[in-house]
Amino acid sequence: MIPLCIPEIRGNEWKYVKDCIDTSWVSSVGSYVDLFEEKFAEYVNGQKAVVTMNGTAALQLALVTLGIGEEDEVIVPSMTFISPINTIKYVGATPVFCDCCRDTFVMDAEKIEELITPKTKVIMPVHIYGHPVDMDKVMEIAAKYNLYVIEDATESLGSTYKGRMTGTIGHIGAYSFNGNKLITTGAGGMLVTNDLELGNRAKYLSNQTKTILDNKGCYHEEMGYNFRMPNLLAAFGVAQLENIVEYIKAKRKNAAYYNELLKDIKGITLSGEREWAENCYWLYSILVEDDYRLSRDELMAKLEEEGIQTRPFFMAVHEMPPYKECKHGNMSVTKELCSRGINLPSSVSLTKEQIETVCNVIKKYSK
Image (tube, rainbow, N blue to C red; front, side):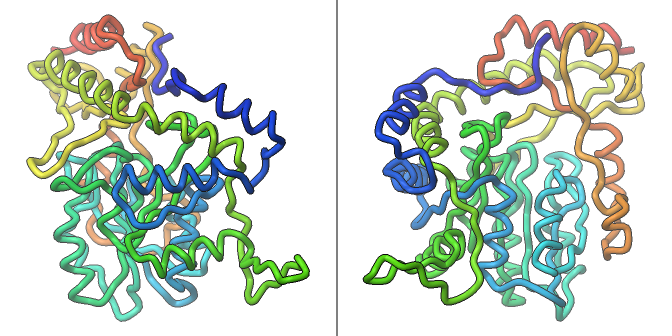
């Protein structure tokens, strides 16, 4: 089996985790928690990083930190993992769905403004599969209407927009360290902001709003959340972060080889990379068009028969039962992408021979 995307563990993971165990600092307090936040903020060039138990928690924490709640609306793409949409509901707000770009698969920034109402408080671009949203346009609209921007960068760690790391351009960014992400802590996430006041507020909220009194008692001024990451996982993350540059190089090299082998196959459309973007290619993605011999699902079945694991694009969330009543614009591109898109094997450890195997199967069934 050629897996879709598995973690790469090649550095100091065992050493740092063992240090946690040897010193008994295994829970949510410990030196690796602070070090992971510090090193991560340094890597993405952000002012403040706050570790969380997963990417979903980082997104919810971002919304809570900004005071988003009942009666508020958040503009978000429909073609995404459901996590960002769920977090909007967690805080009592309402998602409003925006269509996507056909070439990059991300939220179409040109279609945001038509969805804004007096209730709109946040734009939440999702840098799906690694490609950045057009953040200049997003920030221009946000400034015009006095809106917050929360970047869902859970799939785009290492991607850049005009030289800036995704997740650091809006008011707050959120990242994920799930097992299939570019770097992993098994489970975990990170909130990042360049606004120190927001960052300190997020850290306070994530730790049950705990204040330690002189007598060592715990005092809580307001309701908080237990979104903390254990020191064990943070230690793993510090080790992973040490190799992130090499991981991104491998991902981009693999994507370039896919592009070379697939570019001339009739009926297969490759993902685009805008001139202002550098995609980390968390997952390498293609579209199966009408002039390919097989449908998208038929091709996936053939790949599976050959021992190649793939995944269809995320289904449109606005068509799912919990969100069918939510407002949205014209979703024609989203609908098309969801029916045509395939994610191909994208592990850091993917070999040229494995890429050739995948591409040969795709080529075999072309017209």
